[in-house]
Length: 467
View 1: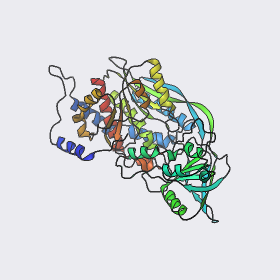
View 2: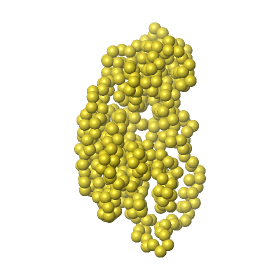
View 3: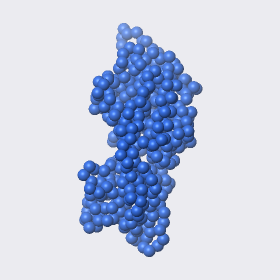
View 4: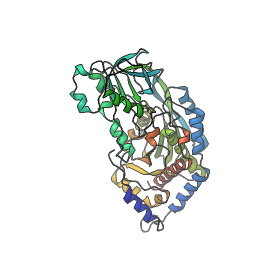
C-alpha cells in the first residue's frame, strides 16, 4: 500500500462532471436497459439520508455497550446486539460462527521516569495488546533512545543489555494519505519487541502512532516470534511525553520504572455474527463486513463501530427499497480484529471448506468519515467494469477508484481469488483518535456516516445487478 492520493486531477474531473448530465447507462448495443442507475442511486441516497438508522445504531453500540474487547462480557453483549440488529434490518438468515480468540487481560499498568536522583514522574501509557507484563513487579532500567534501525544495528549487545529501549519515531506528516503514513511507520522493525528483545533489552517503549499532537496514548498490537526465549513487555506513550523524554535523554541519563500486570490466559470462544438476504437468482455471495470488537478501553466509534453500523444499514436499505437481489447479500461482523485476527481467518476457512462461490467482498474499517471512493484489489477486467460506473458515483462525492489495496478483515479472502474492495474515506482525522480513549461517538458526524453507507449500498447494488 504505497500509493498517495492525487487530489487535483480527481477534483477537476468531479468539477467538470458537475457541469453536465450523467452519462446514460453503459448498455451494449441492442441490449435492453433494466435499470435507470441514476434513479436507483437517488433512491438509495434519499432512503439513507432521510430514514437511515446507522447513527442511532452506532450510539447504541458505543454508548449503550461501550468497549467490546475479545473474550470480555462487552463483546458478548455486542454479539447479541448485532444479531438482533441484523434481524431488524431484514436479514432472513442470521447465525453465529464460533471463533477461538486469545484471552488477554490488561490489568494494572504504570510508567514512571526520573533523571539522575530526582523525583519519579508518572507518564501516561498503554501496554501493547497481548504483551507480556512484568508480573506486577517494577521493571527498573536505564532508558536508551534508538530512532532508526541502522543505529540499533550499530549498538553492541553490551550497550543494549538490560536497557529499556525508547523509540520516538513519528508518523511522517509529509505523506498526505495518513493510512500510508501509518503503515510505513507501523512496519518498522524498531517497533518489534522481538527484535529488541533478541538484542538483550528488557523492555520497549514507543511513541504512539498518531497524527495528533496531544498526550493521549494509542494502543498497538504486539507480535512475538515463536522462538522468543524471553518475551519482553512493551508500552506506548503519548506524543508530548515522547518528545519531552527525547529532549531529556539528550541531556542526561534517565531511568524508567515499568509495572504491568498484563497477562495471557489461554483462549475462549467468541462469534462472528453473520446475516444475509438470500439471492433470488442464485446462491453466489456478495459479502461486506466490519470488525465488531474494539479495544478494552475504547468505545471504538470510528474503529470500527461506524463500519458495523454501515454494513447493517446496507441490508436495511435494500430491504426497505424492495430490491430483488440476484445474489446473496451477506454481512459478516468479525470477532477479534484488534488483537489477533482470528475472526477473519475463520470466515475465510469456512468459505473454502464450504466451497461457496463469492463474487465480491467489501470491507470498511477506516472510520465514519466522508466517503471518497473504493480501493479495488481485483483483476484488471473487473476494475475496468467498476471504472465504467464512475459517473454514477460522482454526484455523491465518490471519485477515487485508483487505489489497489484491501487490508481490512476481508483480506484473507484474496487467497480464494475473490475480488476485494475497501471503502476509501477522508482519513485526515482518523489517526488522531485511532486505538485511543478519544475514539468516541461524539467524534462521528451523522451525515458523513450516512454518506458512507450510501456509497456502499450503491456499489453493492451495481455488483449485484451486473456481475
